[in-house]
Length: 248
Image 1 (cartoon, one colour):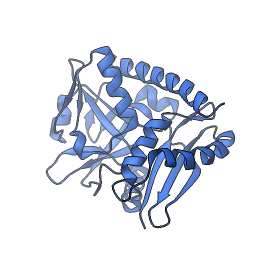
Image 2 (cartoon, helix red, strand yellow):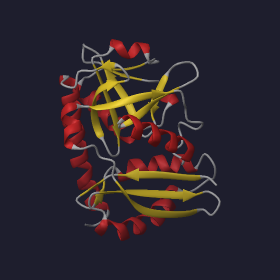
Image 3 (tube, helix red, strand yellow):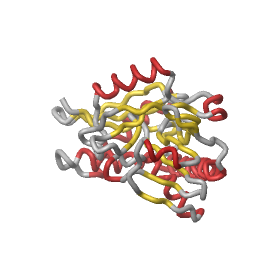
Image 4 (tube, helix red, strand yellow):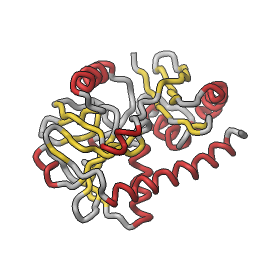
């Protein structure tokens, strides 16, 4: 059974980056079957509206089952880190695993189970996935970005990881702020070259990382602060778009 899904954060009982998530969901579904985008929106919109009054502090999960071609909407607990983690930085591990379909957001219960177990046993927020050639591709439930001492943002090859919505917004901030973005293979050994490391995702937004395995990072990098401020601004702009679309 194949389930394709999206998880959206909420603010003021509205989904954030709704259209970006819908476009990615549509791309994922169309890898298997053809589905009209506008028809999909017509199906999903009333389902989401029915959940919005109860969505405070929750994420909205949209699931499409390929066998039944049915959409379901659920409210799920947000995995937003506590305030202390944003101040002191989170911690990560690295594991020799990779997704079989990195460009499609589909349920992978085995990977999720492994990730949850490792994170629980070690106090990690997430684990980074290392592929067969030693490249770190993404987190089990997040993307990651490195920042060097010159303030440049370094990303793993985009073809090897899920096209994260939060990361996409950060790249927009980088273009607007003139922050260079470099795409290259990142290995466990090359992590030591970087000043800072952040993970990005629906629940954490932008979470500075203080350590990954035994490698320490600077959580006070000015580029990280600039990205966080820019991302919050993108969220606020999108909130206005969501209010108009859902007539709330």
